[in-house]
Length: 439
Image 1 (cartoon, helix red, strand yellow):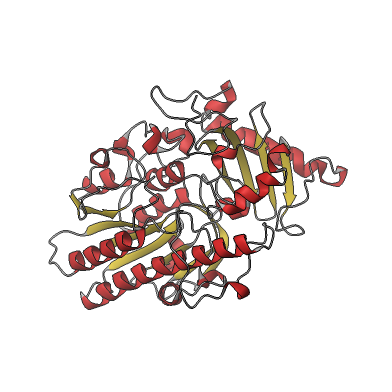
Image 2: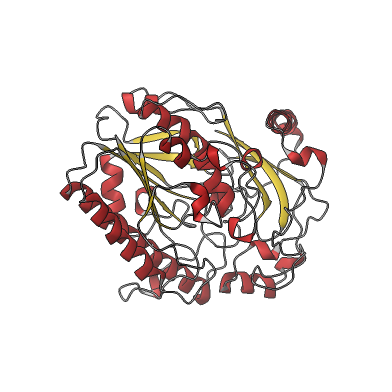
C-alpha cells in the first residue's frame, strides 16, 4: 500500500470539516471519504518539534528536536526518521515541497525529491501560493508515472504560514469574524480574511492531488493522510499549549476500510501515527516508538486509544520551557522558567500582535501552573489551580506529568535546557522573532 502524507503549516483545525467558516470543498470530500479525528493533537505547537514528533514517533525532547531546524536544532539520530525506516523496508520515499525536520534535506534520506528545495522559510516576499500549487502539479505528475515499489510521498505546503496571501475577491471583510481570542476590529478581520484565503490555497492543492490519485488509478492502493503541524499563527494559538495551539486537523482515508467510523472522538497524538502506519503497512514497530497505534479504528473497532496525551515547548524563536498533559476532561500546563513574562519573539509578527502590545500585552504574566476543566471551560479561561474543589485533580495531573517527564528522560528535570552550539535563538526579552536580538 502506498502512502501520501499531505501537511500544512499553522492551520490547526481551521478547515471546513471541523465546522469552521472556511470554504474547503476538497478537504470536505476527503473527510467524507475517510475518517476525521476530532481530538487530534500535536506533540509540540512549534514547527520542527511537531513535525519531528510525528515522523519519529517520539516526543521532541526524546528525539532531540527541541527547537527550529532552520535555526540550528536537529534530531539526535536521523535513522529514526520514518523516511529512513521506510527506505529499509522497500519503499520509494519521495518529497515534494516543505519539510522542517532538517536544515539539510539530505539528512532525511528521501530517495527522490520532486522540487528543487530552493526556498527560504523566512522569505515573506515569495509567492508561496504559486510555490504550493506548482508542487501539487509535480505530485500529480509523479502519480501518473509507473512505480515498481510502493511509495511514501510527503507533500508539504507552506500555506497557511504567514505571510498570508491577499484576500480573495469574494470575501467581504464586513462579514468576517476575528478569531474569538482577539478583539474584533478591522485589522484582525483583515488578517482572518487573509488566513481564510490561505486555507483555500491548501484546499486547491489537495484537490489537485486528489484528482491525480483518482486519474492515476491509485484510489484503491493508497493511504491518504492530511494534517498540519499546530495551530494558526495568531496570539494565544501557535506556540501555546492551549487547545487552539496543539489541536490539529487529521483526516485519514484508508483505501480498504469501509467499516472505519466517519468521525473519531477519542484522543489522538501525532506520535501515534508512526506505529499506526507500521500496523497498516504490516511492518514491525521499531523499538524507539513512544506512540500508540490506532490501526484498529480502520477495522471497525473505534475503541479508546489513550487516556492522556502530552505536549511541550522548549525553544521556538526564544526559550520558553513548558509542558502539558491533556485528558478528555482536564488540561494541566506548567511553565518551568523563572521568567513568566510573555515571550514576544514566540508570537509571529502581525497586526493582531501589535494591537495587543500597544494595549499592554507585554505587561502581562503567565501563571506558572494552569488547570482547566474542559467540560465546563472549553476555551481555557479559568485557572483552577487554587480552587479547592479541584485540588485532587490538580495533584493527580501534576503527578502524571512529572511521571511522564521521568519516564521519557525530559532534560527539563535537570534544569535549564541549553541550546545546541551554533543554534540561533532570540533573547527572552526580544519582542519579534525577526529582530537581531539573539542570545
